[in-house]
Length: 111
Image (tube, rainbow, N blue to C red; front, side, top):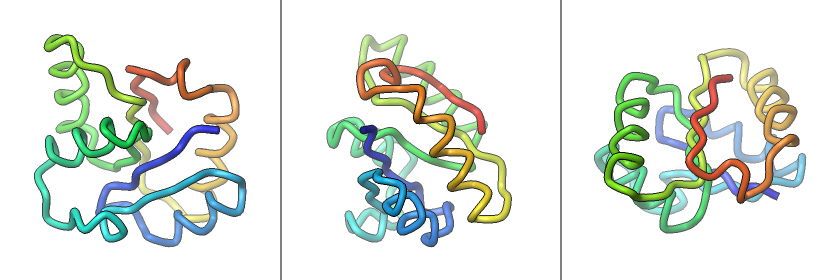
């Protein structure tokens, strides 16, 4: 199962909803990373081998490209539009059910 690291702009209610669906989920609050830069957040998620969940499309599209250009790997970046937290968790679980930790590696997904 894919592990997920939630950016600080993602509603914290996503965590228990995804955990109820069997995902391991960490938040910036859990990891004491509140206020860290986007690159620090991305590096932290990659070090933990977690997919990164964010609403911040522009910055993380660029960071994904930078990672690939630098020959670095990440464990997926999921860019989600803002919506009802229950709908968001349901969509994430449905989309991620088609991936493994290896197949999501270096993928950029839009939900």
